[in-house]
Image 1 (cartoon, each protein chain N blue to C red):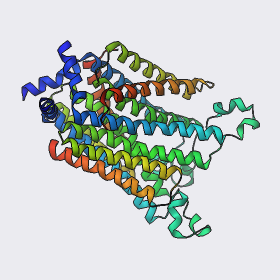
Image 2 (tube, rainbow over the protein chains, first blue to last red):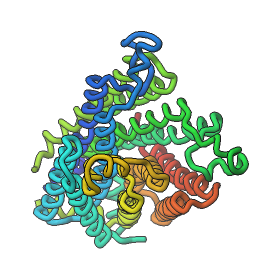
Image 3 (cartoon, one colour):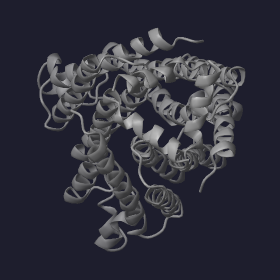
Image 4 (tube, chains in turn blue, red, green):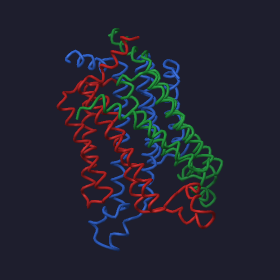
Length: 159
Length: 159
Length: 159
């Protein structure tokens, strides 16, 4: 049993896997941050969707007026959904890519560009910056994941 | 080839990994359950979004009236999206955490608290329970994932 | 260090893991394709949600009329969300299943049926095909993931 334990620990000692673990954790934490930003805007803009969330503002009509959509809240929510649509494939395909034995320098290039692009994407979405800032940062992240998927399929292909 | 097979099987023999696999499967199944609950409410409340789903109710206006939103359906859908936003990071970061060689007891503590918190969150959302039930159960799950991410980054950090 | 590298590469040499990597990459790429289809419909239908995306159509009212929902755009978005709700559990549970040492033929059966079902589901959603096409293809994919989860829990169960 102890031997197994050691073997597992070795995975995290591999440099490509450590790089993957670092960047995957960073982008997942960035995605989780969107929940806090949504909560911040919901509270400061007083814009809720669940009746039980407005109970502290009183009963009846007094509370009901806070059940509304707010442009800033909706913007953060769209950014959050875009993260789910893009960061989840990165985490999944990135794991397979990290386990397919790429060069550390090539792997780091992929992970760094993706992470940078998604951080830029968040700023472009939330500030918001004029297009094509958001579009380009989205496309860069998308291309990185696509490149990793190509490398995985080239290495693993077994239909 | 047989040797490789054996080596892979060993990963599932490692106790921390087995605990991770158990809880990850449970919370993912719990998330999948939301689809069934949504379908149940769509059918019992007769509230659909795709015209082809109401074809069995007749043609034209007879069917069109069932293309509507329903408060209960929307509530389950929000719970489902909240699961995606929180369970996905847990599964991704939890895998890295399980592979970073934590103590079994510490790992079990993380997995159990997260799983319990998300089950409570679902009940708090669907019944619904008065706040801060839903808020607190969300925050507990969020903190567990954050704690695992911190441990992963402490162990793996390679930028 | 070199020895570790070799050990990692071996994971991708395992046939069940290679099959998993192939099908996981394919369904994740299919999910990513939904972003491109959404963008295509947003541009051809001129239906946007962010004011900064319509800036190229002029200022004020001239641009504002393109901030609207479109039935085709919303349909693709629902298909994309359904992919997130179903492909993400497949990728997570599928990894655990691949690492639990199943027979290659059984594993391939699971991966192939799921992938086929989700491709059918996308066609059924986007064309759209009359029900129960979409419902059945959804149920088949759902059942495959459930079957893999059952196998994982039977092998790994450690609460």
